[in-house]
Image (cartoon, rainbow, N blue to C red):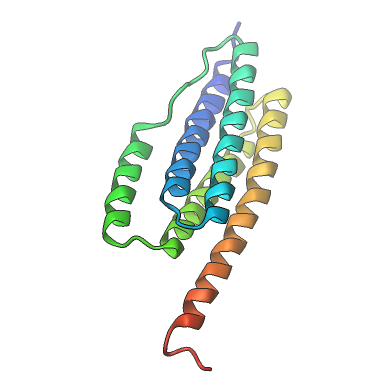
Length: 159
């Protein structure tokens, strides 16, 4: 008999992870920095790999894995597209990536707190969350660097 609770939690995380991959791909496409482009593109591919690993767990549990992101995320990307069309800059793109990865990290942390999860599912989620947390730290560091460069170029910054 399938473990419906684990399948439900994993499918929600798969959708969130695929949303993250789509958001990171969009940011990579919009970025004017080749370094940022390659970083965000690699992170998007990493998210798709995570989603595939979780989908394999859902299948092993007897369920059907989610294969697409959420409707909410599609709406968020539409708002992001409008925002970038109006105020397109590298700092805004990096900030969007940082906020998105922070939200994904928090979502995985919340899932790990679920006491109803089986040990196998918990370990699958823990491995993915550890990678997300580490990579989120990299994106946050990049955001701080971009923000400090923007501040230093401001005419009000002390020289």
